[in-house]
Length: 445
Image (cartoon, rainbow, N blue to C red; front, side, top):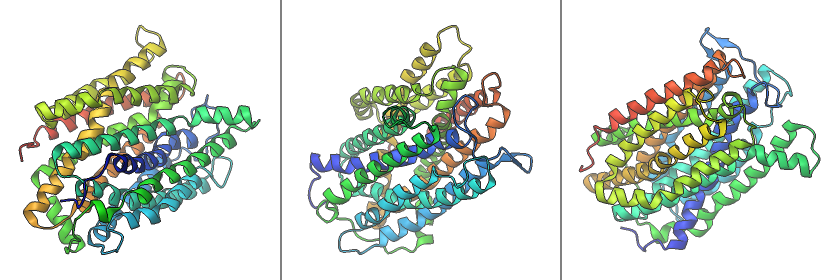
């Protein structure tokens, strides 16, 4: 039980941390493939070669995979340190504090290649900066998420705080999706002729802003006051084994993995879908992302109501099913008997509900799983549950970005777009898999 109830103002402060982290992470997810492997009509130059490794994987796929894989392996380590921490200021906040500056700095460096041309040197540089960024961001995010079950008591409180988290997450997506719009402003206001320099200046400013926002929960949430959890005494490997022994948790993990792999395909491909499949300007990307995530906010009260009345599982399953149909729509973009704007806005509006529900409910479900496990075992391993979750999230994101980058080999330019359309089919299959596995989840457990 928390020592004191977390007041509304501190709930907002806690949710701000998610916004800052989301800004940095989505800068990487949304802009990285577009910046380093731009389509021919983007006004940018390719910075890494489209070489095939073993005739299958391109360099961009391997770079994305290496950064996320190292990060994913690091998750259980930082979770174990956080779970067992006896720091006088708490188990979680001290780790978050030390991670803010390196996370913002290495995100900034990721968009500053050493060579202003297509080069293997840039590939090595990108690999190093991505690994350091993801490790820093994880050092913040795993302890941050572990605070959620520690500062809430009831299922309703968990859903509410998770909803505030998701608001922060989608606001971070909106800001990160505005890079090209803001870069247009930089070029206009500051008379910057080089598009590459304008993008770099924009990313630098957003990294500073994101770091400042990530400091808000560090400064304003007193962990000792609002959390009464005790350090875990389990060593790393036994803690991992006990976490995986939870049956419900396994089905949760597999469906979450499939969902985030599919979501990474949409995030990485959005600018390509807009500019290549529909022939719209890239500045529409920020507007469309804003419409989608702001539209999702409208559904938050409804999702809380439906989850309370019917349970979380039916809402999650419906969302997976709807998202699978949206991916089919991606395959047909530009070929439907409607204007490009009508096509993309129809998909964006339909995506608002699943984005909202799959942003709110999974974290609330996991918080309940972790809290129930703590009651049954007497061990507070909230950090480890979220670490294992984020291991699979990052693995899914890694494979999603890698899959998208790989499929660009089969076409990513106007008139040669087969690879982009194939992402729609892959996303459909992944959402169906998520639906099937989560259907095995026992909510009453």
